[in-house]
Length: 501
Ligand code: ATP
Ligand code: MG
Image 1: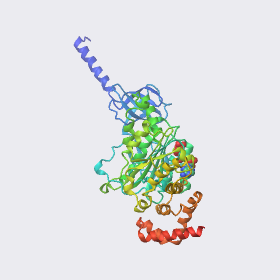
Image 2: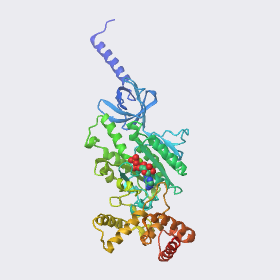
Image 3: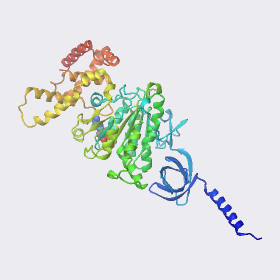
Image 4: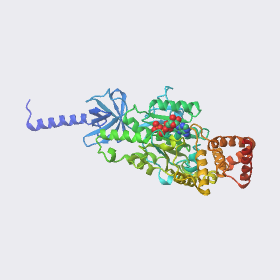
């Protein structure tokens, strides 16, 4: 058979076209390299950012880098089954987690898979873990209190539903305890809780879950656990997964509380995977978009306007500081993203003042709009009294002859400090906090020895609940002290003081 040059070239061209056609399967790629939980993939030209990829051995990965030549993905499972040259498939889905009431009372992985041995989770819906936060028009300002049950917080740094309040402090200063007490205090209040553990020990998470179960507080809680033993990518997606679960309830008009324990470890996980993805490092070697990472997460916590169901997500991110340095990179970032911070101090904690809240550095920028009138009436002057007390305390160490006014400030300050102490796992109902602080404000305790303050307040509340049931109920209902009530209360407290003697 004789073929001329033209025919040969057209045949070859046709063959090449066919070959290209075979190659152009954009849904499949090839692993170029894999290691440290990161895979580089050739192909997948249409892959989306955040898309879920399927690797051999049913391991999932998430697209993080879209480069000109390749795609960088983080692995959400073990990399042991993956090697160079393996085929990777697109799933056409971004990372999603199951949502809904089936999650309540469960411990799940960042992908929403059960890890508590209680069998599969029943769900009928999934949600993408990343979503654009509701816009300004969809929101409403904070107007309902989120009661923590902790006197030191509800009085001075009140939190409203839909607020983002940072809990910040060194290690072992009671940060987790504040978040957990707040969760315990939501029992019977219709607030679903999401606790996201990032980089924690599995044993601490297990004992926390056991404690919540023991208190009968686990049936409205879901724990998302990305423990320290999990890979950086899993720790990275955990808070976003928790937020997606919370959003489902918020959009149904429910109130949700979400705690991120803690975002310092989250930042470290993100830094690790960013460096492995060869993104350029910035300050403290964190990637440049670390602020955006936390802001797009926390911005999703809000209170929705009534026409959008009126639900809310209150976020309690936790940040661990080094030697109380709140001006480090990650702490300043998260401080500026949130609506205030609860600053915990090691010195107070070791001195036995727990919760170790520093009332001077702690603020709540929006929460007072949601504080009850009664609490405002009794707690309005607390912050200034404490500041005064701390200032005079340092003076009083110099000399013994203090004037009467200073002595008064010191005695009252010491009583206030003592009254704000509270054990963990013992949150108080709002009206009991208000009654205790009423007695403190009325200076009924200033002549007591300090170690009597706690027992006196405890005894007083149970005495009032016995002798003046109606008054306590009225306070609970009206949420304010009127003149008549104040008069009765003053008498009752005086009587109780007599009885105690
Ligand atoms: P870490 O930095 O390890 O995460 P943390 O700041 O989260 O620590 P917690 O774990 O909450 O601190 O508390 C440390 C210890 O202090 C715990 O053993 C806890 O029981 C105890 N603790 C916390 N709050 C109180 C409190 N109000 N009264 C008594 N003990 C408390
Ligand atoms: Mg902790």
